[in-house]
Image (cartoon, rainbow, N blue to C red):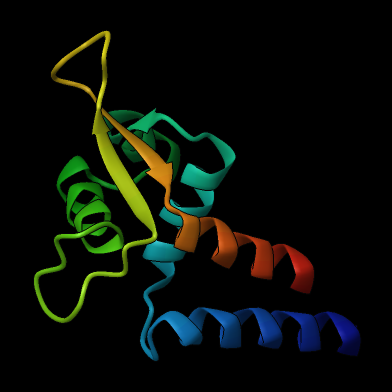
Length: 106
């Protein structure tokens, strides 16, 4: 049990490397995107159970459009080639490196 708590603590510290106050909702969205690259905003909202407006704000912060502070640039938003209104979410190189660091901890 103690080892699992240490692993959990290492995981939280890894999240803090991105930002001292990195919200858990951001981490949940980032994890879902890493498991299904190309996921749409609507699908991400459904998978996380968060309102679309919240997911949209989180995606902005995780990409290049954070309202307060520097953007995290862990994901990129791409307009779908098949459906112009659909935005697809993908990890950036920085995002992939971060997910790899999380996988190493686990």
